[in-house]
Structure formats: structure tokens, C-alpha cells
Image (cartoon, rainbow, N blue to C red; front, side):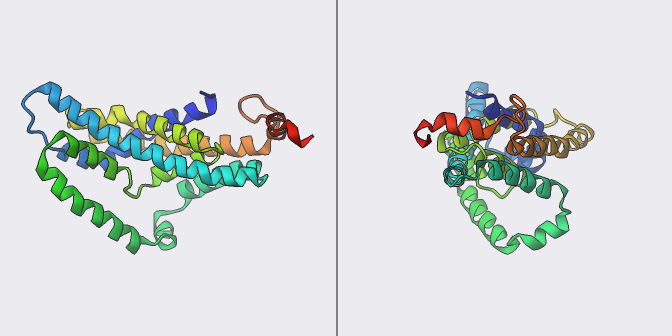
Length: 236
């Protein structure tokens, strides 16, 4: 697995405190009436497995879109565009972002998910925890969109899926700890780590833009045109 894909895991770890703020209340509200600690742990792992599975599926779709662009000969442009999109998402004030996004449609979609959740939370079964996690992965989330923008630049279905799977795995430790030990992180610590999320996103955006510039720097900005001709010798 390439070093590029592992950046998804790093991004997931850096942004996991954001996940605590957004999905933490859901993790704390998960059904807890299990007779043993082992069953409680398994239920939380199933919840996180559902989230990661959804992220991987969304990554495959994002990678497919990226692949279409790459096949059209716009691989470098896609990488630069992905970096610019992330920069806009990080730097654009929230009030302007709400004007650009169809917030009413987003709200209705989120309400439908919560309606299904209401039934799943009442079941208190292992399969319900997995289903709750799957639905959780579809909730509107700016941090998730950062990951999907980066996944698209991988230019492939499998690579996009792998990127988002690693992205999801990076968020698991903090969400798992929150669901098992609710008071583990104080609000002060959360605020401190939340400051790191924009920094991590800006670093990722910069790396994507550098990669698209194809400056010939190993790992950071390799010569993408050379890679393309090497992978497709039939074009000679």
C-alpha cells in the first residue's frame, strides 16, 4: 500500500477530535444494556466497523469520479483542484458555507437518518449497532468531505476506497474511547485538538497542490507525467 494512501490514516487521526464533537453524543448514546464488558466492547467495535464500511464505500465512489478525470488526462489538475477545494472548506467562514450548500435538503436527509436511528436504538441488538454505524457514515460532515476530496485524487476505485477505509480507522480510537469512557477527554483538551484540525487540513491541501504541480520531488511532488507514461507504454 502506497505512502499516499496512508495519509488518509494520518488525516483521520488528526481530525478524530472533530469526530468527538460531531459524533461523540451519538457514541455516548449507544445502547449499553449488555451483560458483559466483552459484549459492550464488541458492540462498540461493530458500530465503528459500520462507519468505516460506509467511508470505504463513499471512497470508492469518490475514487471512481477521480478515475474518470484521470483517464481524461487531467490527473495533475485533479490533485490541484482537490487541494483548492480543501482550502476553501477550511478557510471559508461557516456563514458563507451555509449559503452555498443546500442546507434544507441536508437537514431533511439528516432527519430521515435520525428517524431510522430511533428504531435501531430501541432494538439494543448487536446488528443494530452495526446498522447505526453504517448510517452514521452518511451524516453530513465537513471533515468527511475533506477526506473524500483527497480520496478522489487517488484516481481509482480501490485506492479511493482504501484511502477512506484508513481515514475511518484513524478516527476509531477516539470514538471508541468516547463510547467506553465518556469523560476521558475534557472540554479543554477537545478545544486544543480542534485547533489542530484546520492545520492538518491545510497541510493535506498543500501536499495535494504540490503533487499536482509535479515538481519532481520524490514522495512530495513526483513527476506525474513520467508516471503516466510508464504505466501506459502503449501510448509510445
